[in-house]
Length: 274
Image (cartoon, rainbow, N blue to C red; front, side):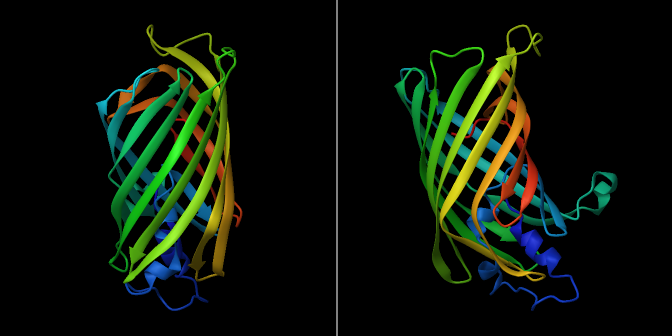
């Protein structure tokens, strides 16, 4: 999930009409490091270049939030990006980049069906082809509201705002400001994965708007800028969720994501991310 523009930049640079190869002193200007770490596990394509991102969303709950009481926890997500990865040639995969973004989150219930979450992360990313590194930070607020009068189907809304940035190659700041709106609904299925867990079929849609320029360069096409992106998908929804890697996997599904500059992909979804 979250870190493939380095691989896209370098892979595209192998074309015959490429610009100068990026170095550790220039790679920070070629792509936005925060945006590169904001993707989930999936396969992403820009032009003719495709890479695979794998995210392990490690979490540790320090205090479980309830409908009436606050909670908090630690976030320890690790991301790896594989260049030229194919299922029929696992031995040929190449680790192009990695990121680690530890942080904390505080969950506050406003009502039994409405909660507010604050979060902050500070970490680092590494791009191995040019031996480049960057320090990355983010902080934000999200809210999640369930329509109490609807059960089958249910209906939930989410809204999130994030301020983020990074420092690379001696340059600091590079802010990213964004807002995300999401909606999801699900219906119970006639079967379940276990006797003590309800299984539902869910649909989700979301849109993200960037209020600051998210700009990066692919040598084959020059500079490109992303101003917005949307995603939609289907998932199996579990109630209660399944605990795995310290996280609560409340759903398991696939989303199609498409950005304003043509960047697109399919990502794995394990939660309604608000």
